[in-house]
Image (cartoon, rainbow, N blue to C red; front, side):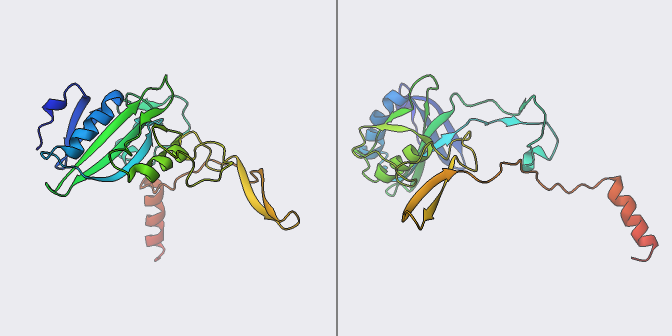
Length: 223
């Protein structure tokens, strides 16, 4: 286990799980920490594996509390009051960095929480790992996170005129507009969404007395 005590002023918390470390980094010290992790021979994290955004909008919220169903994914009910199953994250949005040191055969994860009461801005790490270019553009496109110092921050997956950020939890699943090719105009046009929004209901297999009674009747009739 690597000792990160020297970074106590730059990080808020250190977590250990499955032999890997996660550092909760203060946004203003992200570049300071990344430079040391990249260049210091004791760490030598020369490879940036991934940069991604996270939206914790519904983190730790469940519609009801049960012994088994909630933990298996079927937790979307119709109750108005939500049961908080776990403490919420300190902010809604965060940026996560996955680093790899081939020299020491070690991985590390950095997480930067972005304040809710300020613009979603964090420093770009392209000056340290140039491979962050497309990763940061993707996080900007899908989550609306701005990377200070990025030389070419523009959308990379959605169209130039796309409105909104599709990986945000409050973005509608059916979107806002739909595109189609118009043969008369000979170009792609955008129209209001024609799909009707509906609530998805999971299929839950119940093992209660109703099914036991039916099975008993079937056995009695020789089925």
